Length: 255
Length: 224
Image (cartoon, rainbow over the protein chains, first blue to last red):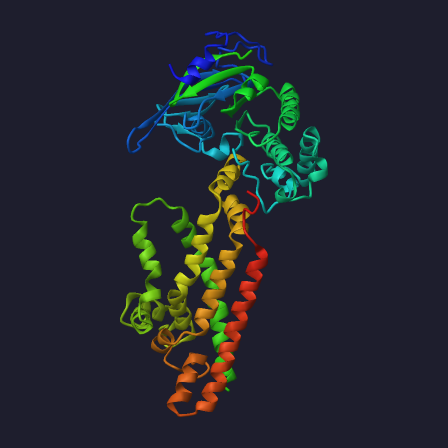
């Protein structure tokens, strides 16, 4: 048994779970409006040992932690949902929208998947102001409408005063909020966060997660939060999936 | 001092730099982001003018533009004359000659743009075109400026290709470098020196201005 499995044995694990989503549908019903269903395999040929990512799970609205050591495949999992990496087989479905289905040769381009993705290094556009970063994904609406939406999301993350600053002029915690705001202002169907709070102190992390939870209470989408930090699992997750060597080895609630 | 030659050379260099910006961007984009396994062959073709003797390149361009080639015949049927020994022919020859001086800095700059920024742009719903113009181009400015400047300066000093393709016709294809050569052949060293110094001064001024501006534009990802 690996160290990760031993650690997880200390949790109370429930194999099946019924949870009311905001729409009132059951957790296990993938026709539910906001449930993300993933079931895919991806093989990575490597010298020495091939690596296979083999993931099956249904993820309801709320915060789901993806926990595991470095190299477990957590970031690749997110990339497969986002469409940045194409699995070899399987499907990715959110509600009744099929993002990827190998058997039916469906693979929506990244641009059309409406996923919010906060990358490990945030990937804020360094040449754009905070305001322009946040408005980047708002296309096809008027300038005043764009401004209204960006103002609202900047307010909800308590950073309206940073609108005209560039990313290099603000702190690490503020950049995290901008990255979250940029991902969420587009009303994504699912939000994915790749170790977003790794470099921050506990107090800042806690405040940002409070803002995110408050936002999600109003919007109700699945949030995949990748971390290898055990403290974050306890502090943040409604549910945790433990990933090791490309597989989910445990699934339950932290307490 | 042959000011007609200077004016002609400047027009040629500006036109070639502008056209290479338009032509070079899609070629550089493909070189930077294509995963075609034989891409290295295309890169070698683009880089050829760096190592090929200018007279060799000029010779083949002359043949391609002349009345014995399909291209030359087609042009002749449209316009009544070939492009050989015309300003248009000089432009074509110069574009080929200066192509790697534009494409290589463009491609190098594109390849340096953080891939995660391009991924972020895609996840935010941006098409490849929008990502190119709103993320890749602004973050590649130093490379673009370098490519434009090098192709301008390289065209200013062309000799072999220009002589082969243009043929030294005053006011039409006699560039400054050919004028200097003529002056030296005629033993007018003073006149040749005057012209050469002016060309040197212009080239140095253009490059200094460009690299000075390049410094201020700065690095793309300074606070990581």
